Image 1: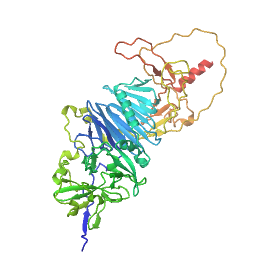
Image 2 (image 1 turned 90 degrees about the vertical axis):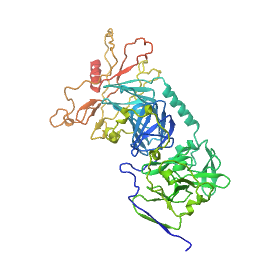
Image 3 (image 1 turned 60 degrees about the vertical axis):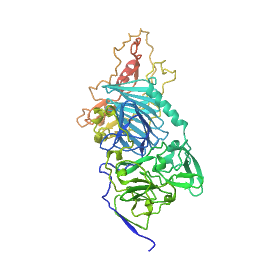
Image 4 (image 1 turned 135 degrees about the horizontal axis):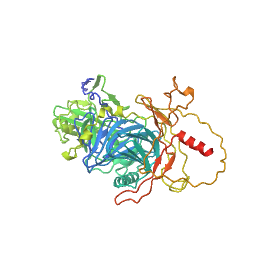
Length: 597
């Protein structure tokens, strides 16, 4: 017979990803690394050095030691950056939602124009949620105080038993049991670095017409590193132009064991989308070109290659358009999931078209592959014409820590994570910080506490109306929005003329603080809103939020201003800043009645 049939039996229990760690989905990656940035994953035994294009998943943590900075890019376009001496934990990473925990240090976040996405940031005592077109800076000092600075857009903030909304130009400081709102501080070195980084990103915006909507944000990586060509058989393809002679895909980088599979981590700055989506083809006269996936068939993969394994070697070749990828999961139309069932593949040999291209097949020795050493060799004959295992990735467990390291480098002991970062119970973060169900982003926000003429802010502009913040009821790990109570309008009466009296002396507080509303001594609600004994254990008053233990806490709203006494700032000390004093609804109504009477 001219055809030699071989049967490859793939067992269901062989090389299934480790329990407790799902397969990677490609929704987050490291897009910038400066210094000895490290990460700890759910399947990694220790903190490992990170590299650009390292995929991240829920449960992963990032540590930036002194002199280091990192940038995380989500597939929805959200960008998160960390300064030195900062630690971050990824709690949830989804298509339209992400949740992170800042354990220490400084964070900068920028969202895109998509109204469907949201980002939740948690610290020890503060939760911040932002939506589209927002830029935010989150800072934690050594005492545990939290500063939330809104550079652009709006944010919903909860902390110290209160909640509020911030707009651009405002900074909220949570210190112990109080929260204060100040004008935005002047940019420091960290803020200026982010401004410059944003300028660089915006300056290299690429053409997104040729990519599926899910991959449009990666057009910026391709811009300046290649060009788009129109090919008769494949439509528009992308050709890299920053390559060396005899270059081929899947050679500048390394295979790393992540999520129960070998994942390709490219050392090329543009090497995220072209190696985890689509296929590669050689176009006559143009060389290697990347063919993006169809708009309805976008699936992230560990690396779209065909494998060959022999007792001595491990080799791979880029898949051409239409060729089948055998992977441990679902990877689109031209793929076979070999994770959970036994599959018999009968063929004479899997004929990959790119094996005929010069230098397309990459080979390493078997012992080098499982040790994490990508030392390429040239065997005496073509591996894909020998007897061996074809199709799926090698059924070889890594035997050295280097096989899990995105970057082969030694981290000094002084730059390892401190004990405070090591002690974080990452498996319980999701229970400690539940997702906020808060509704859409506000169109306006609470005005900043900047001194100015009556009815105007410090810029001479009229203060916009304060939006009504929905009352939130706390349940078992979930926060549910309660419909606002209907409000009635009282008829206005003209004030009676009063004899002129000298104004009372103005009292200046010794220390600017935020006073919560005074507690009620009598339940003034209608009987139908009380419980059976009429003692106020039913729904909270308007302007309050109910805790899980049945008690209520005041909602912090800046309804009145009180200016602290002015004093000259000492050398090296910031000038005193304005703060809000808060009054509840009943206090305002009593004062209004007193004025009318």
